[in-house]
Image: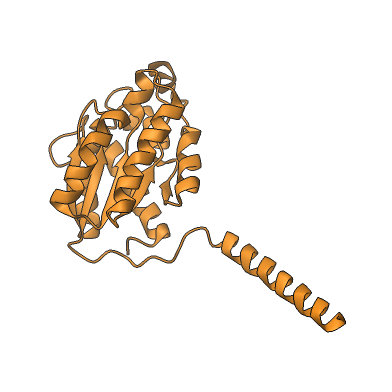
Length: 214
């Protein structure tokens, strides 16, 4: 009887240790994407490059920095709600290895409840997951023209919540930092050319930390 109790105690203890170790490893090991890998930059006007000249947006800069083939699927004015309807056809058309999701700013400007925005973003992440494609979520500040004007922006909490719930990598703090710096803005809600360079540098740093970029 004592031997069985000791064995059971050992098994329970081992299970707790393994659970703790699993909790410490929040991100699974990832292999860097190969040169020429197709990456879908999926978003709104910030992904499109509004505020800078042609070829100066982050998808084009990211392609030069990484050697990936980055598709600019940014639509000015797009919301997370509308973007749900176009993600499937883009995944079918391009069959990307990675999707970078940058959406929510226009929803916030339209005063949509954050809970609704979160569920639309979740649907986009599910579409990627169901297609077997890695997705990375970009945290976006809860944009308001007033807060943008005084440079006091911070990520909406829905992005970290969603990243943890769906177990997807999150690029946090980069967009908020750029758009809070007046010298990096073309207007209150879009980076300028230098801002997009800073945004890209932040994205590349985060993607290297995640393990997706060399």
